[in-house]
Length: 76
Image (cartoon, rainbow, N blue to C red; front, side):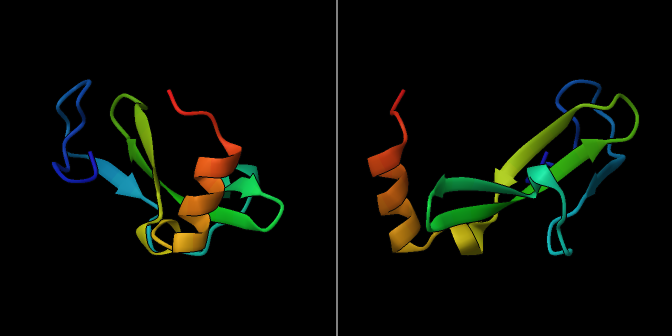
């Protein structure tokens, strides 16, 4: 949805996002460790309700955050 601007479920182009906006609430960021977190951008289809979440590229691309993820989280 982020790149195609089309819902993969219903093919609608009525997609909205909070990317680049002030975020608030429990789902606005993901905590990686005690000192590392990244913000989340949400893309929502207003026709069917399908949504996708993406790590904010600016906060996610920090070396310290990547190292914390690799150390604290489980690889699948």
